[in-house]
Image (cartoon, rainbow, N blue to C red):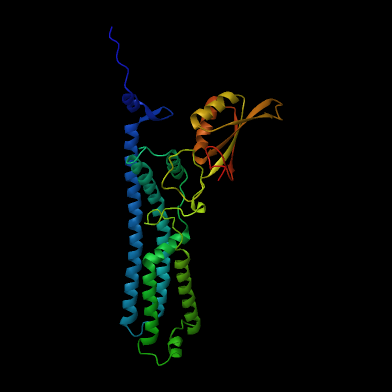
Length: 349
């Protein structure tokens, strides 16, 4: 009888599933295929929101051009139409900033996959870091805007809307001074700035205040550089610049990392099967477990309380593992302010 040769290490690796969950088994080739399709979908969503950004800018440009043509084409046209268009452009700026935050949400996922999945295939050790996978999973489970409203407003203002506001401001001043006839002195031009019962001096002060606020917004948000879709420096210059989200101890660290600290949790499991539950948590979640004695005051029975620190991506897994072993267990999960030690942020730092 001929005995078949055992499979080689390469064959065993190619047939070994890289992901098994609730009856599903995905091997390495299927996993890479799924990631490729996911990457294409995220690129498409980012492109859709990028197109929406351009559409908002086009609205502002068209409205500005039409307003200036109307303001200087007829002598009886009031300068208020320019002020009205300036407020409309400000509304477009707010809408575009909101769309820019959505664009950054999808762009951050694309950037994360580019740097820590595809780039990792090109350099040793040729595989993504566990920290990268957990970061992407957390972003999928709990999406959040990667940049603030202020950064979005400041960036879109500096890139596009500053020039529109500048043209509108100069056109408004030219309208007051030169159209329909040139003003003889500054007081006459200031008097033309009146809008209904509001004196011209008050209108001038309000416009100057608004433009000063826009300048301050553009200057004070220059140092906000969390946008992933921009070409910005990514190297930390001090320890304070390094984000403090939880990471597993490994020499391989995700290259592109979120600036916000990853959400951390502390779980308490009251169970009659502490050995089996703790062994399942340590083997399947790769998290440490601490057992503490407890007593149910209602039943008077002795119980074991298991304590485990987790990240947001592991909470549902903990619940599933516990329910499969002890359906009568009691699980309490609460947010943790800081978690230091093995598997999280290093204690010595």
